[in-house]
Amino acid sequence: MAENVILERRGRIALATINRPEKLNALNIQTRAELVDCFNELRDDADIRVVVITGAGGKAFVAGADINEFAGRTAIEQRSVMRAKSIFTAAEDFPKPLIAMINGFCLGGGCELALACDIRIASERSRFGQPEINLGIIPGGGGTQRLTRLVGEGKAMQMILSGAMIDAAEAYRIGLVNDVYPAEELEAKTMELASLIAEKSPVALAMAKTAVKNAARMNLREGLDAEIDLFALCFSSEDKEEGVRAFLEKRKPDFKGR
Ligand code: COA
Image (tube, rainbow, N blue to C red; front, side, top):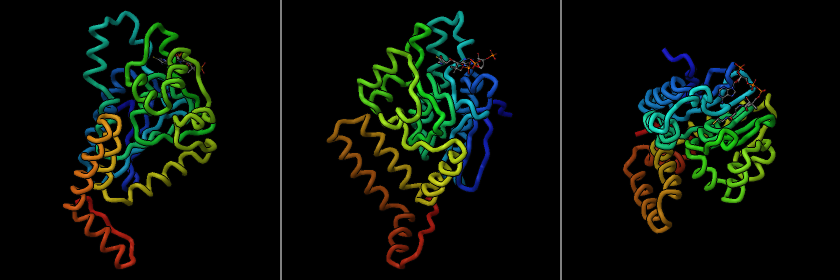
């Protein structure tokens, strides 16, 4: 039974809530393991097409790795923790769209988790940062790579070297988050976007996610070639026939994920 991650199914959308509000949803080993289990469970669930990740309590998305677990931990132990249960790689490799619904502090590993998601929607009261430097360490969940790719080297350097937080407006300005809404609208607006995406072909969504992720993994020529292959692969799906037929028949498509 998961304790720290609450999984709720709302039609085609799954809502995974990190639930340690008394610790601002800090990611301890158990929470990381539960998140990875959650990804594993949802990966093969044909009914779920989009996953939204959020934090409980209204004060934080995730305030980072659980700092209590750092005390006394050796380099070998830390490397093993990061590699064995990498929620960041699990999120990046997850074949369905992942939306981070950010409702407060989004720091350290929390910011890195949001960065590993595909889309970030934040409330106006969210705050973002990579404060690891204040502890004498650096980001280890992809922050130096994904943040840099998303906002550019200058802004990434500033956040990582200073450890200072930025507010939601600044996060929006530098492209760290896709949209910002008043806190009371955050869930409705995020679910609206999730519902729009959930109507699409799951086959095409998976292809699109892989093709876009390739942009950071491949050079332009390789990425363009891979895009053609993924595009062509869509033509083997029933969903492509349904999508084209529905357009020609002037009706909404009913995608089955086949
Ligand atoms: N790890 C472990 N516990 C954490 C935590 C973390 N990353 N972030 C917050 N908590 C705990 C606090 O220790 C506190 O627990 P306590 O009530 O048992 O003392 C509780 O969550 C509430 O946090 P608190 O610091 O009292 O709230 P605040 O509103 O005064 O400050 C923050 C909020 C986010 C500014 C502050 O908690 C903070 O700086 N957290 C650490 C952020 C960080 O460095 N993350 C990167 C880790 S690599």
